[in-house]
Amino acid sequence: MFALTDRVAIVTGGSRGIGRSCAETLASLGATVVLTYVKGEAAALEAVAAIEAKGGRAKAMKADVAVSAEMDAAVDATVKEFGRLDILVANAGIAIDGLLLRLKDEDVDALVATNLRGAIASARSAVKPMMKARYGRIVFLSSVVGEMGNVGQTAYAATKAGVIGAAKSIAREYASRSVTVNVVAPGFIDTDMTSHMTDAMKSQLLSGIPLGRTGQASEIAAAVAFLASSEASYITGQVLRVNGGLYV
Image (cartoon, rainbow, N blue to C red; front, side, top):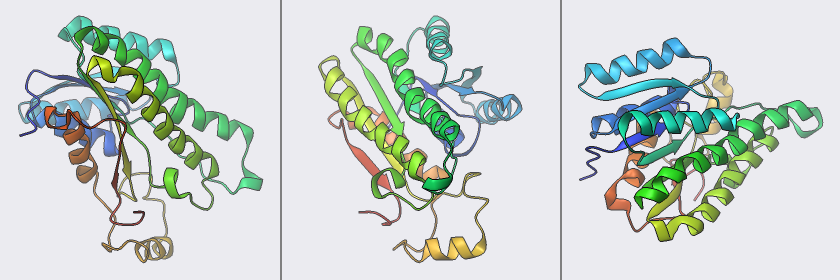
């Protein structure tokens, strides 16, 4: 089950964290994976090397999701080199925290540009070859805070909630072309984004998670892989929550 042999995938922000885990998991299932990055070229090349060391196929490609032309170019280059694009994992994102009264307009703009507009632009670029092939899997990465909110994350939560709305709309638009569009909403996962938390913050957080622990990037990647597979062909417009019971 969940074989992705001969499939071609793009994972945005695939050089580290959840994105890298998604890239590695898709490659382990047989997909050729193009992982995009903005600044972390060394990390991206390291991720590619790790995939290839296990017999997988991968390529790193510089592309900023906040710049639509760069995503168009990344998709075009992928299709030109590999002949197709079957899967998009719209993972690239940034986090800028701040209480509402301290939130700067430029921070809001940056979050919207990458997390929301960038996700939409990625899907817009990817859906073109998918429409022609009459097959595609688009998986957006949102967040538990996009559904439940969180103190100090007004703008971040708004962008992640927006991703859910966008996914549901795109799912309706392209279902007739056999392109499914779904969302994975992670809870608190052990990544660079959560590494800055103090022990007191982590303790308070864990007290609200029924499973009593933070999640692993590999657990998010497994959910993404399922939604990217043929077995999920009758699932579209849905949000798969992977959060340990923090929000149900």
